[in-house]
Image 1 (cartoon, rainbow, N blue to C red):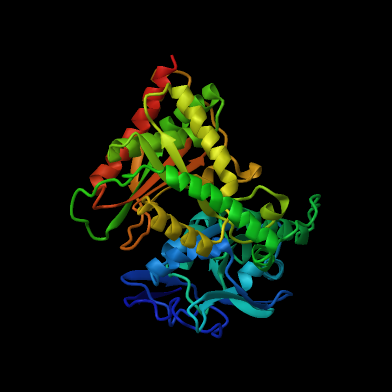
Image 2 (cartoon, helix red, strand yellow; image 1 turned 120 degrees about the vertical axis):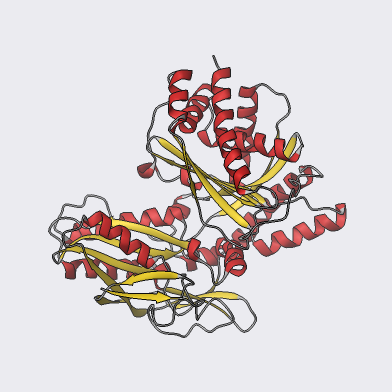
Length: 491
């Protein structure tokens, strides 16, 4: 293994560039400030070919996500999605490479590059053939899972750049025998739902090549170009119009002063993130959801809206909810991005707790089908609202619950709390970690909830002019304590 240290900015970013460029990642032209990256001494070229080549506009979801690219380029490390897929026993190295080639053929998103055309419009180009350089990391005497972690760190140490296909790959071996495949995919290409499907599909392909009996049929793959065709059709336009009518109704109901007031000069980097890992919050939320007959997502949104109301001083608050939009078979089969958002207005007031939870559950249920829209049409509608009312409410607060809404095979399990003492004991195990910081972000307050076995992780990224880091941590702790207080009120 050789060690390289890069100290400059990325050489190629998402600026006005053409679709042409080298076929695979070139470490000699990619740099990241102050970061030391371990580069494997061995790589293997995996070739692929398949149908669907062509240049296409971005889908609505990709246009929606493009804002993050524009704001943060070339600092796009947070848009690297990571997957680790076990290699079945008996599958050799060449068959593992072959399985990767099949995956590239089946999923057009993986053989896509992005560029900005002469009119400054982002576009995606699917290639009919090409190759990617697959890194080889041999664990030797090391635990293979630790080697996989180091491979993930190496593959995610650099942001994706224009010349690359939207995937990087590594194979973990132990004395030449493969044990895992690591994939890193550009988030503009796929979302979390599609990442799970990619993982499942690669596992199925490898099991079949290893000679295992694979009962499930080959899953259908809907391509991003298919989605773009739908969105530019009459049916797509009608879908967008229905969503925008819901948006307009909600926006007009937003409070006149929804913003959390600025309290101090911002720090550098301006947007900072802290994670709270809480078993107590997960147990309390599940107990509350079971008692009220609502989803756990409704509980988390209720907690978030209560805290936002306290911070803004308004009993009515409005914010955005990220939605996976995977409600039809075609949407579930899309190997690409479908994530967008929808607004909700919440009256915190003095209603009984269970009534509040059920009202928010109803609001979420009404809104989830209104998160598919043309971003350009939304911008036009918001401008019309501004002209008509003289005001457009602040839309820079969002709640992301996507990781609590994955496919059934990826849902986690865990029990509700037994009693108050049980919760208090769990609260003593709560821990905090720091997340990535960034200088630019269009969400002043961004709350993400992730569930895993026995634990909920809540991440709060905020403008330090509104929340200094110490207050971000206090706010998360308050969310946990509030859930415990609500649990206690059920007695």
